[in-house]
Length: 107
Image (cartoon, rainbow, N blue to C red; front, side, top):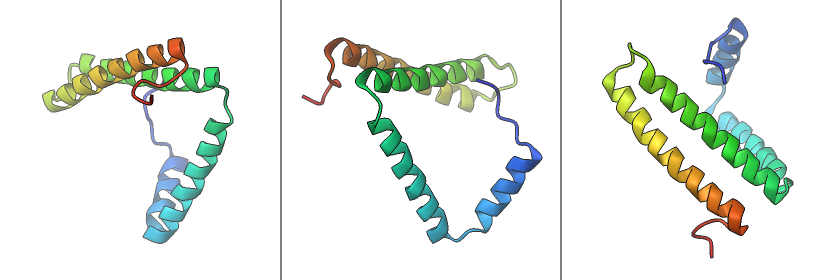
């Protein structure tokens, strides 16, 4: 996963997004969330597990990267430590989900 770098196109897209009304933004977000939900629900159980695991691992890597930055403010490091701990718990829950076939706490 690469560091976020706003290009000129990204900046233009952001400007266009900010010019939209709240209702238009909400409609776009709802439409994208519905599309994502359809895609995710269409995955097999193994696909859902793999997707969740990959996203959580990416979160761990991002948090660790921030913690290691020498110029990173301590408040960001602390937030990253908390995020890392939460992601590690999610990885444990994913491992249980993969082993049992049901999400922890959904019984």
